[in-house]
Image (cartoon, rainbow, N blue to C red; front, top):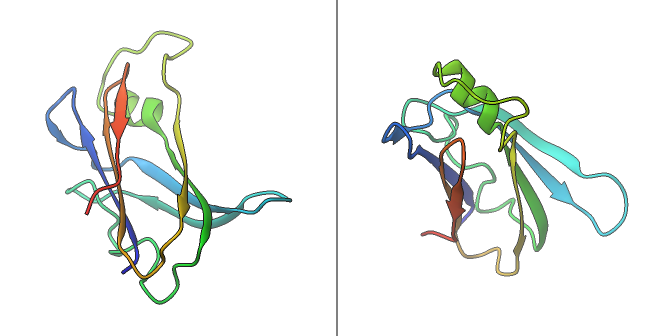
Length: 118
C-alpha cells in the first residue's frame, strides 16, 4: 500500500509546508541510494502523493531526512548556532511491503516524535 509521510510543526501548530525531505534506500553495504528529494506541500505532505507507490515498495531499510533547521529559519525562528536539531534522520525497516507504511513527524526546533501511522 506504499510509503507516505506527513510533517507537523508543533511550534506553530501547522503543517510543515516547504520543508525539504529526502528519502533513501539503505542497503547493507554501500552508500544509501537517493529515491526522492522534495518539498512538502501546504498540508505538510509530499505534493506527488505516496513517496513509494504500493507496487514499488520492497522489503528493506529506508531513511527519511527532514531539514528541520532550514525549515524553522525560513519561518523566521531565531535559532542558536549551532542548532539543536539541524536535520532529523529516521531509519526504518519495511518488513511487509503489501501494508501501508506511514511515517509522520511532529517537530519543533528542540524536539521531535515519530511513529508508524496508518
